[in-house]
Length: 392
Image (cartoon, rainbow, N blue to C red; front, side, top):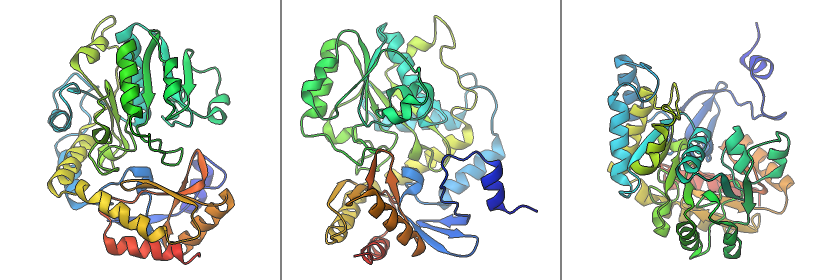
């Protein structure tokens, strides 16, 4: 009989020739446990997904309760399902009045695809402006606006009419014109290694989009749901996008995404043709029930309000180490830059051997990623940093 590891390597499609191949038996809070009883402290949250940690009892209960009532009933948008309506109500109650219409999908890539479609149809334009070193997903449309030629070039041709400009460069905003349907941007570039825009940049971008009639899309798939110290990162700049994208932590561990806009913009998919954007499993009731529980916990327990202090503790401890040339951080999304990709991989390997899971970034191989569950305690932060600093 084949082992799970053999089946994993032989029968599941692989994304690289060097997967972690950890076999996790169960996970709770900030900890994961392997089948050979090793405890691993999770500092990456499944790439900013498990903001409330693993197996939160209220989320588990919400999933179990909804699964006992019903799971899939009908394709999205035809039947009133209380987990969907409750989630839409919760989200819009947290957002500005212009972001009052929610379309639920399965993933971040799907949210990107939907946003690009409604932007082009609403503006009756075809050109899209995106940014170098941006990550928006791996489906064809999302890949087209990804800011890395290495990833794009293997799958050409992609969508026409896409241009990429430098992030955080105000002079490059002149590429946004009356022919631009939309500009898609991460308000913090995550996979580039946590690059934060300079003061005034997002305001200048908003102004340019408003002047030209281009829609502004904020991809908050990684930064949303409290990761950067506010429920949504755009709240920190005061810049409100025309379309907001959420996924990852939105589902509280379940697969869920959303693109959110105004009723006026979202109505373009209702007619000419009808059913202009459809999904079978988007807004799955079990996923929505988990998301509702997650949002209620985040807001009730003041978890988001503690994020900045926890991030600052990480930074204060790690900044003492000569391992790191620079630490870039917003809330609990951190990039710790090292001398070389080899040093990064050595540290990741060492930490995993000592019970700590780290990662790197797609477009920044010289930095380690730190993005733990938001519920991580000060004691767990100190334990994690102690393991990292042992490499000094």
